Image (cartoon, chains in turn brown, purple):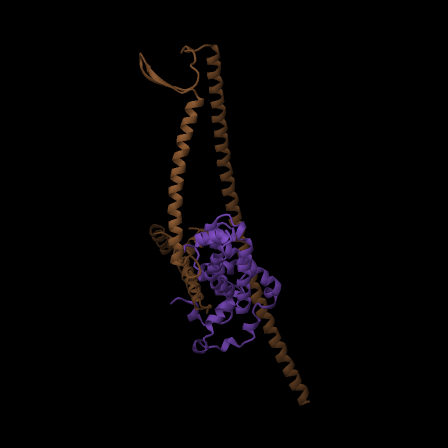
Length: 223
Length: 187
């Protein structure tokens, strides 16, 4: 387990975002690396300290009475109106279907009857019977169709490849971003530590200067 | 009522639904902002501004299911604005703590004065804001790393990394403030 891997997994472990298998694996790996185990204990202690911070009480207002709760009378009235509206809609829909059927039969030359082969239903003008054999035009049409399908297939494959490449690129960019982010966080940590040390040193020097002044004043006053 | 349904209604212009949402979120945002800024008045102001922004921008919210990420993002941006406005990072790093003679603070004294929590909060406030935001959203608001990544629009691993360095930096700051070792170790 490298350092970066540890950082990520330690956080998942401490925040309870690992499943049982991952947790067991992580614990087993920790046993082989006592220094990482010690670091994890420190991180855990720091995390626990955060619970000491006094936060304002959460007053979660659940304003159920403000919303959704209405006069039951209104519900009753709206319910009756809704039922009435439903029945009107049903009647109107049936009438529309009936009218549409009559109009269709009138305008599309509907014909029904019985021939020597059985019953038939026919809409529109009767066409002449066509031959089932393929002629040159049909073949050309079929070839065009196959070509078009091949073209679409190729386009789909190219798009799929493009998507895979994009995903790979995105993943690589994410990894790079992660890397830079970690570097930045490290730098920030160093800077924070440096600032703290600088501040401590400055204070120390101030104290020393103050002491020197006091000594000097004491010496001068004695003279 | 389910939050997503409330958001839909509020988006449709229902004032009652918005009031209900505001009631649910106000104290939560205030707590988040307090964790971030360490000041009750500033936190209340941020919460109020957040709700105003939510009210005016609710129409632009595309996915009602992502309301919580959206509102935290607004609150986070407002906290950052507030910090920039007040120039806190420059003016309030360690002075209030180091000016005290904390080397003489015994664990008993700290416990008596109930100051440990405040010390830790002050230490948290010295962390870089990116680390602080992640720690607050994780520890105080109880969000999952995936949700925090959504709020901050960052990769999940970046969020975890910020949490790691944030905890390390917190420990370092507290050690430098001479907080007794027994508080820093989980023994």
